[in-house]
Image (cartoon, rainbow, N blue to C red; front, side, top):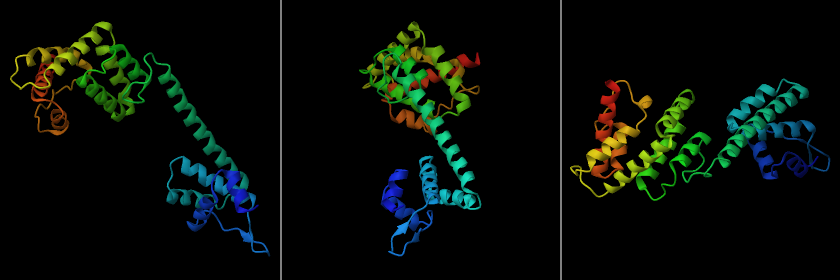
Length: 253
């Protein structure tokens, strides 16, 4: 088997084959009397294994370690492990396709924030079209970030709390009203009299289950709140601060 045939069989380029030779991952084949290199089934198996391992996310140094462990195994063992790699990859693809089908089948389609869980997409669809509200779009971005960064064991609780707070038609209407009030404060100062109403309505939208036991750290110069406040106009930041205070008091009472 020539190098082009080897590359075509595994689905890589001849340049990739030569790169793996250079990296010491793929053994150099024997040369025939005419100077041409000839590849065997073993080369096909090793090259296929390298490709699958890199597709699974392993770096070349990690692939080298795996191949070193394979060195003492017979061909049947290597083929079985390659088959296991393929089975894991197939399972991962099936899981991703299931999530994509669920997302595409969600009422309202894919949200503008990009691919999110079907549960969050359904929640967004229930709130309705808020494309004209800068505050709503910012809030959605934060919810997407929060969902993608929480630990897996906390994700179900997070989604349940958000559904409880925003999942009903009444709650969706309250959320839209909150966005409207906050958008109206975009050019206002922190002492604007409308801040009080915006804070009260916003506090009603905050899921009680997500409020920390010890209350919020309300210092605007601290961590997440500093980044949050930096994105808001003065009146909006003040409304959020007051809403957190109201929600914290309600949690403690």
